[in-house]
Amino acid sequence: MPQTATSGNLANAQGIIISATRYTAEHNAPAMALTQQFKLAKGNKSVTVPKVGQYTFSAVADGQDIVEEQDIGMTTVDLTASIVGAKIIVTDQLVDQSQPEVFQMVGKQLGSGLGRRKDTDVHALYTALNGGTTFGAAASNLNAATLLGCIARAKAGKFGDDIYVLLHPNTIASYVMGAAVIGVGTTPVSQVYPIPAGWSADLLKKFWTGIRPINGVPIWEDGNLTIDSSGDVIGVIANRDALCTLTSVAMKTERERDASRIATEIVMTARYGVFELDDTRGAPMTYDAAARLTTTA
Image (tube, rainbow, N blue to C red):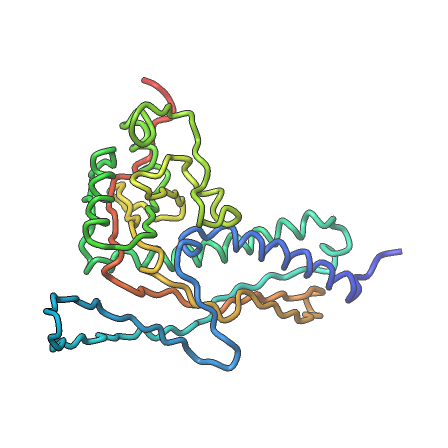
């Protein structure tokens, strides 16, 4: 006797897909995981984040009144969320004949798509940092000197005390091949350093380069960064609070029966926004990311 998909079977299938999607999406957006996170509370339309200026202290003679007043210099950034979504059709036959691994596979595909969308949304913010002035240049190779120069410039420019670098794997490979050693000193390339404290090993472990932090700055890689037609890519060096993410709904699913297709539609959406929070605390990094050789001549 032929089987018929029941609501219970469909609910189980949906549950497996949702679980796989959520896990994959959360663990495939390193750029978002490196930003400052805000949550939009239910019932709120936006979040306003304040930024204040710096105070200057002056010498004061004993018994003399302080006459120079400081200005708080407050500015604000308004954060709002927007919706992205995708739909999948799960047929009754698929539910009847498939094992949970199929639904996990579908969930991973959805999660990869959502994670990639979130990741590239953050990437799009890089070019505007530092007033649009990039570190590095088109067709420039990343090496120990240029990387150290970027880090020194970021620290001298007071980017902050929680700086990181995110670049394409091909650019990282260029650095490692050119440097011969990781970081400074005589550390062999084969040695892998653990993820520095303060960064989420759960969300970022797949994107950790294993390179010893340079002057305390960790280096991450992200294959979702877009290589242009000239073989260049724009990564970033920034403090964690240079960019931010506002999440209203991390993921929402709805199910609707489509009787004419003998199937069920599963619609997944997420509501979030990514923003530049402080232009002065980050800069784009433009370097060559052409494909590396995998064979010798």
